Every structure is written in C-alpha cells, then in structure tokens.
Length: 100
Image 1 (spheres, rainbow, N blue to C red):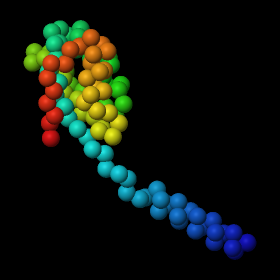
Image 2: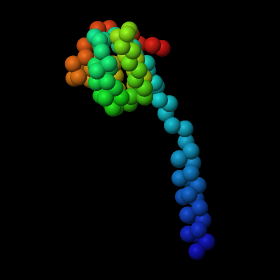
Image 3: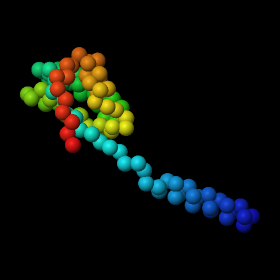
Image 4: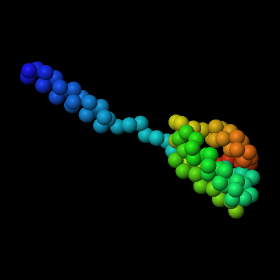
C-alpha cells in the first residue's frame, strides 16, 4: 500500500512540474494595412471578419485614414493570409507596414 501511495505522489509531483514548465513565448506582430475603406459599413465588414481569423489578438479600423491595424500571433497567422482574408471580403489592401 505504501508503494502505491508513494507512486501516486511521485506521479502528481511530475505532473505538477510538467504543468509549471515555461511555455514558448508567443511572438505578437503588429501590421498596419492601408486599404480602400471609405465608409463605416466597410469598417463593419472588416470587424465582422478579420478578428475571427486564427491568432488575431486585436483589430482597429480607422476610416478617416483608411487604415486597419492588426495584432496577431505569428505562429498562427501571416501577413499574406491576412491579405487574402481582406480580399475575401472585397477590401483592397493597398499597402502594408509591419510595426516592430
């Protein structure tokens, strides 16, 4: 009986160490897209689609300057796939600038 209890305590300790191990750090990138947005309806289209792409952390649309700022996890998404997501909702991306 003591052996079983000792074994269970050891397994719990190992599981605790495995859970407490440091996780890989997420690399969050920020990209500013210059688009052809010209109305709040277009901005709403962006807000209904882009935040639901994989790895998206934040989306900000600025209609007067025609820019969309996207923060995303580089392990889950890329600028190219985000550009395709904009194209799928008929929003033309004119220029892209990655912010460090």
